[in-house]
Length: 444
Ligand code: MV4
Image (cartoon, rainbow, N blue to C red; front, side, top):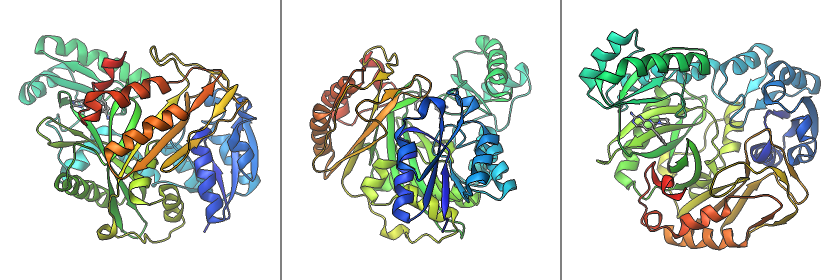
């Protein structure tokens, strides 16, 4: 096992990773920007190094600073958390070159899944269902028109280096295809430094369902069921749950088997997530793979009893999975609400000083957070304040538990989206489990 891990992140996930390390008896090294010198992760860690000014590009994304911090402090491994450098193949490669263990897959696997054309091609070869698509990157307008005619309108143009919904263009008719294609290419080049785009059949009002996988370095792979993540706004999830009220045991097994096939087929190691769209006919289609621990990982932890961050660390250290697929069961129901510093109606960020803080608690309530009374929420990073996660026997009980926990929760001095979550808990479609990706648009 490792002696010391550097946590290349901030906020709640840095705290979450430090907690796992402490329980495993591993020393921790935090890094922080000048805006984060009073952040909780710097206090919880055994040591902390300032790696630059507030701007992420000069601190949390600064590969050179991070590598030197690890060398100076003698850290053997780095946990990237989510966001920042978590899916940056260059960083993983720099770690490989320097003999530092990156807690995640190899840089080669990250590169493969980071390119959405390669990822889809690989999924298709491994018999993981995908929506009809161009089967390759598109060369020119003519090519785009030919391919779209075969697929049938409406189609989506997506960037090969995109992902997470960034850089997509919906095209309803052949007449608007050429201009959309050129715009998509220009935008992809400026956003991702890569103009490659591909075309896919558009799936109307799908649900976003993702399968959690865990894979060690010895070829053992299991899935831990699904998370329902349809409640999002502009590709930012705000509430997730497990199991999905839309998925029965049979569908879960089919999606789980497809996810495991993909993971085995690419020799993936680490925890990971296979994202699917579930259409109205309950057919699932592979979208992309996330090669990191995700924000919403706690709902899976609560229904399976597996500590995903500890699993990541053990896998990176070369240990064998002790989990067996036949022993994995989803028990009860879990819901996570992302508590953001923002206006609950306009979604405008609301950084500033937290002047009062009352945490919810009691049976079945978990909080993953980095805030405290007197903490100043900096304006430079994401506005996630806390994840409030509940576990109960049934979905109805989980909703009741979440409602009372949200009512107990009080954060003074800044605006939060707690009122929005309370409205969702009372919504008839939510209570009925009828949530597609348009659900939240009714709340603005
Ligand atoms: C789609 C789609 C409809 N049809 N692909 C957005 C995130 C990225 N992983 C894939 N995304 C979508 N791809 C086809 N062929 C609709 C979305 C989409 C979406 C997906 C999941 C969750 C929220 C979403 C919001 C808007 C669009």
